[in-house]
Length: 100
Image 1 (cartoon, helix red, strand yellow):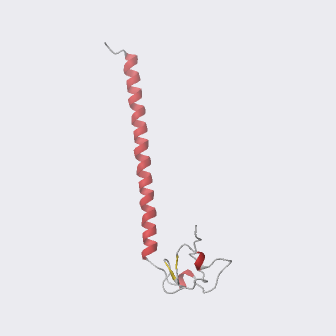
Image 2 (spheres, helix red, strand yellow):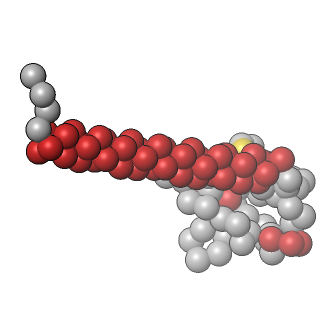
Image 3 (cartoon, helix red, strand yellow):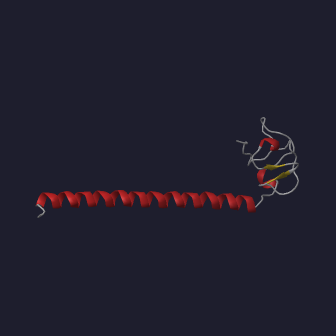
């Protein structure tokens, strides 16, 4: 059976649509992977490099109801993933990040 020009046109259109969808999937996947890598790198950098207490305006008392013991970076009994040295659970600093 011979293909008509109309059949060939339909096949070509289907092929082009499939390519467009595949390209979108690949580009979308690449973008998501890139964003994941950026987030992972930022998290690792924050965990590896603690900041000096003075640089984050650390104080040993709470500020506006925020205190270290309510921060996601707090490490009981008196440490922080983002700040050097010993800290008070009642303290506060500018990198305060509330626990989820």
